[in-house]
Image 1 (tube, rainbow, N blue to C red):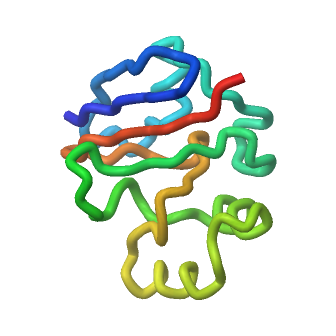
Image 2: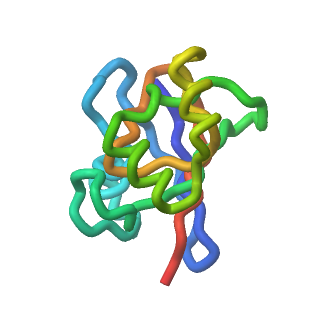
Length: 121
């Protein structure tokens, strides 16, 4: 099981449990389940509306979630949140290149406690 803390400047921090090993539960689906107001447009990884910053709760840099999928790579690259060099290194290391993710695409792995920063309106 993982603890996921959602934080935003306009909303109180909320920590929820994510089921370990579900391999299907995204950050966005977890947020929706717990009534956390992350903006999203398409929910398919095409628009970038659900951009979040994900880091480890203990502050250590480690693999969080699975590598970016093709949709996430394309959108994050278009938004300027990931470089081609970071993408290339991700394919070697098999870990996400930085803290930026799309909430609708990032699957929570078991055993990692995460801090998810999302924009507020």
